[in-house]
Structures are given as C-alpha cells and as structure tokens.
Length: 211
Length: 226
Image (cartoon, rainbow over all chains, first blue to last red; front, top):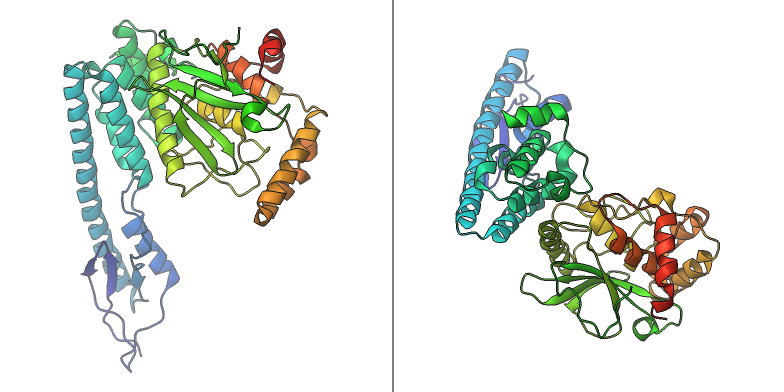
C-alpha cells in the first residue's frame, strides 16, 4: 500500500530543496523510482533551457524522485519543480546578464582609452571562459547586448570570429554578425577584409542590421 | 622569395608568417618541419608548432634554422586578432589536459573548441606540424587551402610509413591511433610543410586549390632548407 505523501529532492551546488514528501509503502520504505517522472523532472530542473548555465557536475547528486500515488500529486510535484527551475533559471540568467554587462563595460572603457586590442582580447577571453564552463547563455547574451557604436571594428570582429564556430548554438549570432558587418562598414573599414574567409551575412539580416 | 634565417621576420605591418626548417631541426635528411611564426603584442617573435605526438612548442624565434614567408593577404587588425586567439590555443595546449595526437588523418575543420583545446574524437585523427597550422586558420574561419583538392600521392606513402613506425616505436600503447591510420592509408592525403608555407604566402581570403599552391612551391623549392 503506497501512502499519499510524495516528495522529491533535488540537490545542486550544495543546496537541497525539498518540495513534497516521498511516497512511502506501508512499511515506510520509499517506492521504486518512476523513470519517466524522474527524467521529466530532471530535465525540467537541469535542462530547462539549452542555454542554462546549470551544469551536471560530478559531485552534484542527480535529481531523485519516486513514483507518486496519484496523477494530481505528480502534476503538483512537476509544477513545483518547474517553478524552482524557473527561479533557478531566472537567477542564473541574471548572473549571466551581470557578467555580460561587466565584460562589456570593461571593453567600452578600454575603447574610450583607445585600447581596442585589449578590448577585443578581453571579450575573446570572456567567450573562452564561458566555453570552458559551457555557459552559452552568457556568450549569446554578449552578442545580444554588444553595442557596436561603442566598440572598434577590431573588437566587434574579435567577438564575431571567436563565436563563429559556435554559431549554430547561438541564436543571436546571425543577427549580430549582420550588425557587425553594417557597423564595420559605417566605421569606414571593409567588412570583407575583417571577415575574410567567412560568408557574407544574409541580405535580410544586413537590412535589419541597418535599422 | 623565401627569406633565410638571417633575415629578421615581420618588421613591417604583417604579424604572421610560416617558418620552415630542414634537417638541422628534424635531424632527418629530407624531413622538413613547419611552424607558425608571429609577432606577439609584446613585439617578441614567437613560434607555435606541433613538434610530435602531444608535443606543442611555444617558444621565442630562434633566429636560426628556419626560413620563412609572411602571410600578407589578411588585414593587419585581423592578423593581430588571430594572434590573440592563437594564444588561447597555446595556453590550452600548455595545460596538457587535452593533448594533440600526431596523425596523418586530418579533419580540415573543427579541431579546436572555443576554449582552445584540441577536440580528440578518438578516431585516429590528429594533426601534424603542417596540419596544425592549417587547422588553426580553418578554425578561425580563414581556411588557407581547399583540402578536398589535395591529391593522394603514392610518394607520400613512404613518409606515412616512416611516421607510423616512429609512433609505434615511441608509443606502443597508441596502437589504435596508428592502426587506424594504416587502415585508412589508401585515402590519406599528405599536406606537406612546404605547401603550408606557400599557401600562407598566397592566401587572400579564398581557400587555395592544390594546383595553385603547387606552382608556388615549385617557384621557391630551390630555397627550401633540406
């Protein structure tokens, strides 16, 4: 006989969150896991967004969940987990966004001092460090937030080239490349020369980039 | 024309070159070695090259042994950007977590990840001194050559055999790597050091076909170190 209590525990980054109680059999032991529930919940928590910065770290215990006794309980559990995932996602997005803002502020500041090579290098290092922790959200955020009016052709090119190999994984890449093309042209440089070896952006994206 | 070791490289606006050495470096007559040469932001001249299996060298320009040709077909700003990106590869190679296998099986693109580490697909592929340079340019979206236009040459098979023998002797535990290369021997293409020097000097934005590179090699072949 399975009891009515259901709980799920997720741990990550040293914190433990408990949402519900575990379903217990009459002898008090926990029931066998429901793989589909576990997968859905796990995915919801850890893979809610392909750009999430949550990583599966070896010492991070996997999400654990057990079969609920009723569908309602399952729905409630999933809803709660989903809410936590959203909360996590919001906080991580916020952290990524802060990092992007900081990286760009440093770059803009270097540009004001005519240190464009240092600005470009800093932004490339930012992309590299995001890649090391598989945080594409921050790299995509950089592409979105990048103000081409405050960066030199060198820094703009550096960012686009450093991210070009990940372009399929970065939703903002195509439009940023087109914006970069337009901005470099407006700065009196040749985008063909700066993006030598690369295909020209789509005309529709270039038109959008001029607006 | 190929510049000799006594000439000082990269004194003008260019910051990139390809350097080539002969038996004074390889200790093997007829065996050449190619290295990527650049002017660092500090103005120092540096060489970055793959010496052998899992062995990347990052060193000061020795001002001997190597002849060189500049890469002049790339905007100077982009040359410097490339250098700053290459430094990421140099740093990643230095941490030795993902070393570069020595192999004649070459993937023309997708050799380095965004943190500069070599992507080891454990399929027998890897790099040589020549393809190490080609791979860096290709992954920065400036492929120097059209690898598909490269011929399979029967005379390169002697070189492949020599390399496999050395790999087998030095790294018996790498059985899979050299067996995989041997299995694919009929499809292997060799990208020769002198071809990388020629391709670098000719590059102007479009990947170069073998026949174009070959003509340049013929023009400068007399000055290559032996």
